[in-house]
Image (cartoon, rainbow, N blue to C red):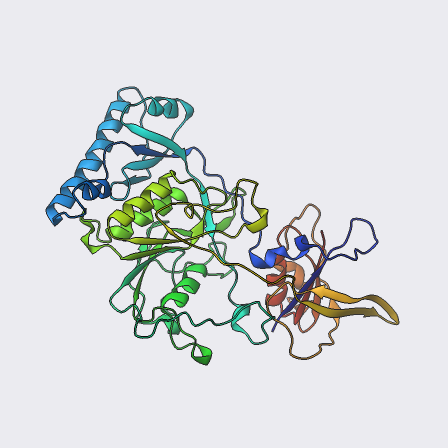
Amino acid sequence: MLLVVGFGVSRAKQRSLVSEASSWRGLVGGARPSVEVGQRKLVVLKAPSLAQRVAANGGFASDAAERRWTAAALAAQKRLLSDLGTHGIRMRVEFSFTRVLNGFSAPLDARAVALLERRPEVAGVYPVRVAYPASVSSELLGKTGVARGAGHLPAVTLPGYDGRGVTIALLDTGVDRAQPHLRGRVMQGLDIVDGRDGAPAVADPDGSGQLERHGTELAGILVGAGGSGGISGVATGASVLPIRVAGWQRDLTGNWAVYSRTDQLIEGLERAVDPNVDGDAHDAARIALIGVAAPFGAFADSPEARAIRGALRLDTLVVTPVGNDGPAGPGYGSVSSPGGSPDALTVGAADLRPEAEELPIAVRTGLDLLLDRPLPLAGAVVSTRPMQLELATPEPAPPGATAADLRQFFDGRGISRVAGRAALVHGGEDPQLAAEYAARAGASAVVLYGT
């Protein structure tokens, strides 16, 4: 069990009497990595996609007709690209969309964008956006001692309905199919990020051993069975088709981070409605669950929104997250893309607790009492009994560092500085990461501070 509390400290030596949310906000979704998408753009054509052709035909089409219409959409793209080539503009197309949307993504310079926007066959040129897994860590929620109101097990099942015979396309990170609660319920997946067989949960390429976990967690919510206390997913009879649209990719600093791009997301929808890529969407997954969200990008006419409309026309219901930005959102709203699509089933959650639970915390050194007051619980787990722990701190961060480093929690011999103790940790720019490192080093509790 890991107890995490937080309190704010001003830049001066005087301690703040008011707890600051910024010192523990990271535990409900830490700082996002900075990502540069370069000059990638999404180009949408006016020529109809497969979905538009099917809708114009009353929602019905033969296998042969769908393959013919898919080929026609691709031919329209090739004609445009060939014509642009005569003007000296040669594009490196990354993804080509023909089923839910007629368009493509490619790196484009300013001259190419200006030329495309004037073309009569182009409906629009849009920026590629970055999407992040929309989650709150479920590891602590699975333990005993959950804080009041922090989590519960609602009766969400419908008697007699378990999803049997339904395929759910899960557009997220890879899924760990070896998890015992998922065995037999997860199909061989499709990998959009780097083409791996089966769309597995991939380990951090930097060698930390950390697996992508968001897709596995969502798969458990969908079809997991045999959990402790009889916990199971909401549709244990369904099958999950993992489509890896998010995963380890380079961020702006050159390090590896887990994220997705909106062109990868649209490609995932293309594969959800046509898993065997034969141009015929009669084998589409009936539900596509998206687990990533692009912050503050919920436009009703964006390429993602148009793609969701196309998926619905091909009889695939798309379920999307509303996003985790909450009061951090700008004045025009905090719904994330593709949650703003009028054709999506957008899901959100409300935390109706009027205030965070507080715990009495006392910090002593010798006969001096340094701190004795209630502090807000940053995590979701509380201790079932009073805890008396020695306070320990990690090695100070090197000058200029803005985030915690796991090596700070171990000495030169590899012995943990905080194991079995309460770790007093500066949250920095990513309090969630700081708390996770303290837990991995064996801390029994974490006290976060900083502004």
